[in-house]
Image: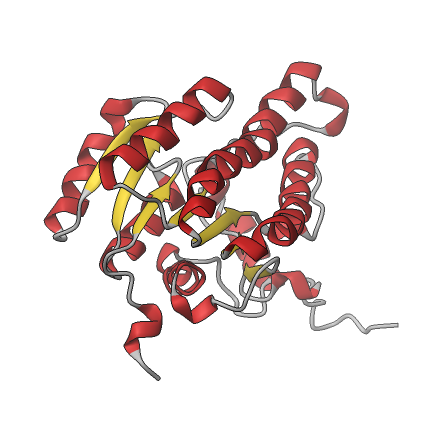
Length: 266
């Protein structure tokens, strides 16, 4: 198989939410495949170390301030990205947040904060970037979902609602924009350690329980996502759109913790 199918040389990728976490892994993988980047955060200074890292790989990285809860900020980011490179080929719609609380404790403001960031923000970032992609007749939009796009978990009501919405949004946008040469897919990680959930991974018993539920018997490592994001960004996925790609070690199969050896199934 030709390496050209996975070569991103000459492509320009926006990766939102790249001050930390999985956004940096997505950006790093695309840069290693040859793409130049626009990297974003609400706090511009937080992007400088990652900008330097990408430049040391021999690629460009233009840092841009972005608050996905602001229409003005979104449009300004897209305009600056286009101004910097003259085009936008790839969007990794990664910026997001979470509030962990029992459903009975979720407030109106909690709900709005999560949905405004994860769902409304993702739509309007995609819209602003797609306007420019459509003008050029080419684009790859990768919305970042989650295993919660297909499964519910206690204590994550707004988050799971937002990620389920991302899956449906992906299909709608794929139907809208396919005729313009723009594909829209959803990359859905399973359980990966990030800044948002690192406190959970400090509980050894919880990690063991989680691993028992995953057919691959371990949580995800960030580089497990590298090939998937490059695949969806490159020519390799040119006839794939509107799809959900789960990178979850199989937990979405519904695996459960094994019964104790002395127990017998009924």
